[in-house]
Length: 273
Image (cartoon, rainbow, N blue to C red; front, side, top):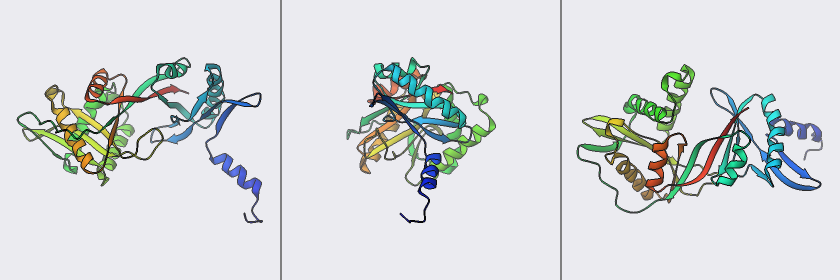
């Protein structure tokens, strides 16, 4: 290092900008740790703990780690703590006992080279364009309602943020937007894109989102055929796995994804700080 550099100043600077990690010292033996990344979106700041962001010998260790960290997170302006936990009941219970609620599930599956199922008569599938944006937002609202989020309960800032997020997603050249039409009207959609490299996910994974079918066209095999087409394209582009997420409160989604072949891997929990 440059001899003129103030080492203490550099150390303290890193300490102030880095998200801290806590460890539980049991008389010289590490009995647990907790790390949380503070992330801000358009509405609030939250803390996120990944699958390997926490370890603990027992529930008491976790409780003390959370208590210590929460005090600092509140001072720094965080409003909620999200945790990705392995989907094992015993692991989940450690968090729910501390007041955390299950929010969503991440599921994964191996892509199959079987023949895609055909759409019912009168339906067709194509790639979406920006001309479909308004209809895509309408269908997104249908998905929100199925997950317990009413459009009228969202603030203007939240609605605008959702629109901008969808526009950014569709503008990504690696994103594929699929729409199903009936009588020249879009009645279903899904979006796929390469899952970013991250802990807890396989390499060569295709992420699936925005999956929704207009309620008047559900239970006709539209969703299965649409996903089969999207995954066949994914296989052709070198993807070997797929993953998606669904809300715990959306029982229909839970039944659909597990019947399609997705295996739950992680559960996301949340607690208001």
